[in-house]
Length: 348
Image (tube, rainbow, N blue to C red; front, top):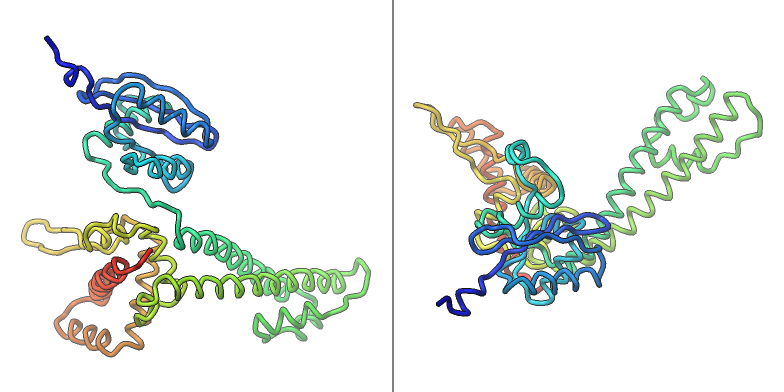
């Protein structure tokens, strides 16, 4: 006779997330598909999703796609309820070619990835100062991008302006050009000179507004990074912007990153074997968070100019015959190790 403990098998839940709804697929301990259901992407839907999954058996784990985007709200709800949640990447292309693609198939694939251990990353909690930094950086990055576009438009208009106006504005820095054009008082009229002056004034005022906005947001980011990670900001080459990006990569729960090698791989600076025959070498890991990789690269370039130990290391490895790009890769891996230990020391 089968015991009750043998009858009640744990289930694994996979969630394919979307903007307005989430599709859930549940499998048993043997990987057999049990049921699939769709729930609205809102607080009531999250509660209904959890309750429905638990009605099918004790839940071993929730595998959620897109915990940093459409699945962020669901992941926060489940973690807050004490559920085990892992982040699932989208299914690979070979599997999609073999079995096809729809929301239910993706949900079951997420469940299998969580059950097999192929997906085991702990999602970011997104409930602390790092989440606040993320919002500020999104706003500042948008302002900086728009400001760059405005500056390019301003300079392009000057380059094609009538000769008299071009001679007046040529050679000015972007800031002085924006101030000069913003303070101008163009006359009405449809001739090219006056129309160009009006266009320059409009773009210049936009550039100045965006410059002010970006400066204010940078000050807020600096204050928050100084409060959250003073040890990280104190490292040579790591200012508020780079520190903010590295904090965003780690999340509000940096202890989810169990090893420094895992953090290095997350940042795309882990060495990857590239050996073939008698050629023994490693190459740069091209995966991971490219924004974190770029932040570490900028920090290393600054350290090569201002940090005596880093400059001495570069000269020593160059004398050994190592190429410069390989040395920079090693320095990025070293810096990732230092950053990882600073992140573990954070009180967040």
